Amino acid sequence: METLEQDLSRLMDGYRRAIERALQRVPVRNGIVSLRDLWIETALPMELIADLLQADGIQIPPHIVRVDLARPPQKDRHGGKR
Image (cartoon, rainbow, N blue to C red; front, side, top):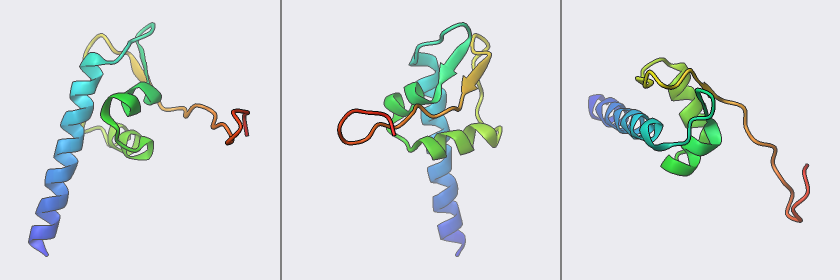
């Protein structure tokens, strides 16, 4: 059981590092980074990115004021909004 917890902890640490690296590379608009840009840069699920950012374990660079966690509207299969 301890090994499973260690594996999970190691995975979460890797995800945090990936997000921290992505925060250095994604576009910053008026001090704001979008969840979508982090998702594109890391390929991690948006929910996981949002959860890790809200857990306060990620160091955000000083030039970033906040991360916009709003999800972009989804489109249906024909290109229209749902």
